[in-house]
Image (cartoon, rainbow, N blue to C red; front, top):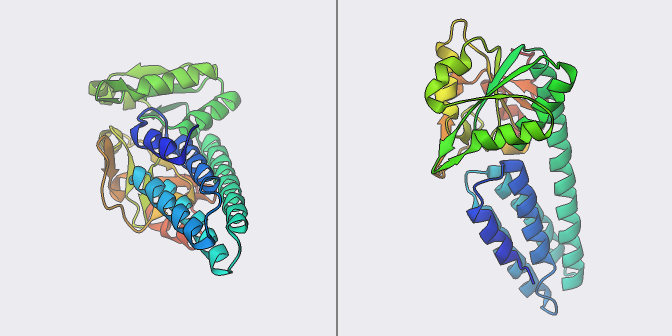
Length: 288
């Protein structure tokens, strides 16, 4: 029988799926943990779930949405435990909290995809890199409205894997044709593009983007292009954090100065404006 520890190991080792897909796996791990440890006292159950939530949050430190959601669920469990309820009541509270967090994350992602697609549909040619299921869905939605949209994807090679190839395959499954460029052909990939659109594993409140390599190289190429190509990242607001302590291998930190804007469920914000998303009252900006 699969346990929450099995799910955490899968989360730690997975290098194929994007942040949104791994968040779903993290919530699955929490649900498994919530359904384990039957027959324990309320205090022991709460301690068990706290350990599981901590392990889930630590599994992928760069993907901050995982830790944020784990902490939200844990807070609900601790409040239930503090109310002197039974272990069964705490379990029900944990599962309800997981369902709420999952629903909120999915809705935020859906809205971010819709907003990003609206921007992408106005561009004749867009370029992306790494792998993001959110970006794939946004491009597919945009292509449905703009069938002549040109899509370019950097190969995004890391440790023998091409994340660009995975992006191209996912787009082709959605009947979107794209052209894959080698990472050494950055200038050619950016030439003539109207928009660069990438995903986000984390965003600091000062506007630094954390995303898979070669996001930094792409952002620099967009800035060097004449005219410069707008560089946008799609990121649900729960990915905005004060800072990121450590980067996992294969991830880039893109300075705010190289980012044109961020697209979330709240709209489009400049790098200076994303901090407001953490307070729940975003300062929106118009499209770049």
